[in-house]
Every structure is written in C-alpha cells, then in structure tokens.
Length: 133
Image (cartoon, one colour):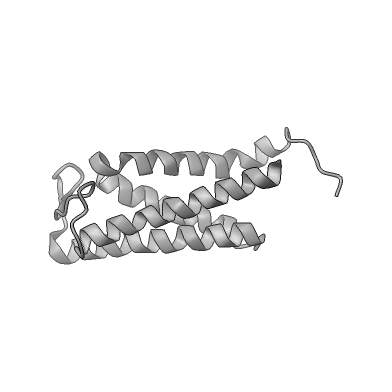
C-alpha cells in the first residue's frame, strides 16, 4: 500500500512539473495561455522585468518543469539525488509562482505542501509501520 502511495505522489510531482511548461510557453511567449496572461510586470505590478527579463523568467518555469520531472524519475528509481533535487526545484517553483501570485497561487500552495512533506517527512516516517523486508 505504501509503495502505491509513493508511486501516486511521484506521478503527481511529475504532473506538477509538466504544468510548469505552461509558464514557459506563456512568458516566452510562444502561445497565449489564458490562465497565465503575458506581461512584463510581476509582484502585482511592482516589479518590471521587461521583455528580456520576462524571457528569463519563462526559462525558470522551464527549469522547474525539467527539475520536477527529473526528481520524480529519481525518486521512483530510488536514486540518492532525487530528494535534494526535489527540494531545490520546489524552492525555485515557489519563487516563480510567488512572482505571479494571482494566476499561480495554487502552484505556490502545492509547493508549500511539498516543502512541508520534505521537511516533516523524516519525523512523520517514524509513525509508519516498518516493513520486514
């Protein structure tokens, strides 16, 4: 049962990463994304990035997408770098979603849940039943 839960969580992390592709597409801009309207000002209009800054911002969305998918694969495969990568990419994802809070606040909340799970996971794991092999 725990293995199935782990697989489900890893799949959801991968999907969260793929959703970040919308930010890349919207802010490059490659295509209009209704949920993420192209703009060059962020933080509720308080930060002007300009066209080039917005392109850099879009690349950060792309890096988050790649990072979440890579971390998902690593976690599923049991590779040691999966959890540190997930932590780093979640912080990056939180930064890009906070910069454009209004349309991306759901992603920020998801990132908060991921960070809480990463930080509290070791403490919570001791309450789970231990497998005998």
